[in-house]
Image 1: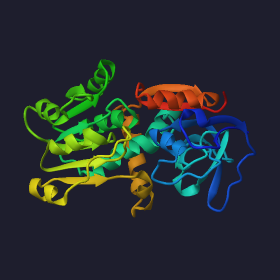
Image 2: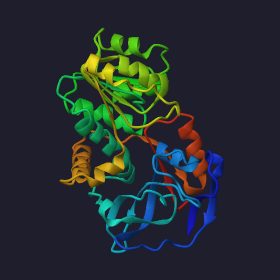
Image 3: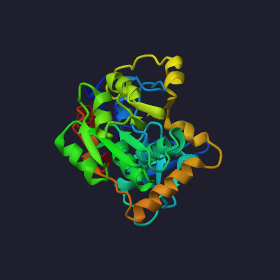
Image 4: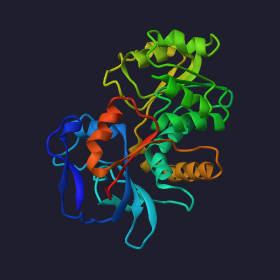
Amino acid sequence: MRAVQVTEFGGPEVLLNVELPDPVPGAGQVLIEVDHAGVNYADTHQAENTYLAPSELPLVPGGEVVGRTSDGTRVVALTGSGGYAERTVAARRTLVPVPDGVDDLSALSFIVQGATAWLLLRKSVHLESGESVVVHAAAGGVGTIAVQLAKAWGAGRVIATASSEEKRALALELGADVAVDSRAEDMTATLREANGGDRVDVVLDMTGGRVTDQSIDALAPFGRLAFYGMASREQPKPVQLGSLLRHSTAIAGMWIPHALSLPGNVYGKAMAELFELSQAGKIRAIAGGEYALSEARAAHEALRSRATVGKLILDPRR
């Protein structure tokens, strides 16, 4: 089968187009004929071996696919790795049947990025009606869904950050009340100004470095920052617990694999609600570009340049 493989760690240049044997499902796994594979920022970390879970070589990247099982059931699934291929295997417990009327782009937008936005707002920060919400990287895969969910769930003011006028316009179109430049030198002042001079209640952050530090400084008493990535590849300053106590603020981390182990099928509930909202026209996936499988390197280059919006996908048939 056609696949993309990494045999040494590094940037987009290490993604190689190869022919590999079909994978063989093990205990509790299912073989999937891949219609499309999703591209996530985490994939770039996986190729570098800078992800939370260590990578092992040789590696076929790709943590999510939509396709069909041997009995013809259309599913979207978490694979961990192996998604950049014509066929892959996934643990049966990660498979989610895709309802009629939900296209491949939407299914792939929801399985990781939509579920991440859902979990951040529902579980990490416990959003309450009327609260102000900052969504960093609001034109990205998680950000575009988070803006829409925050508005659908009653946020009082949604403040989007993005690096270009085009991206800020998209965030406003999706329901953000105000959109500001993510490159602002003083993010604390910028966020407060965007919130009418007040400190903010909630921040969803996947940037890291200075942006994270200054966002923490913008939190109101009982404000919460949920940290779920580090696109800048810059570490924030160490958090002093005394500072959290002094300002009555909270910082949460979130890594989506942990949601699969939560009791009560929380992940399934997230996906069901995302599908329902999509079918009702209350949220929509944003297409960021479809690439041939052989163009995976170009997809990673585009994603790392931070010039993309929405969801990037690969077509293994090309």
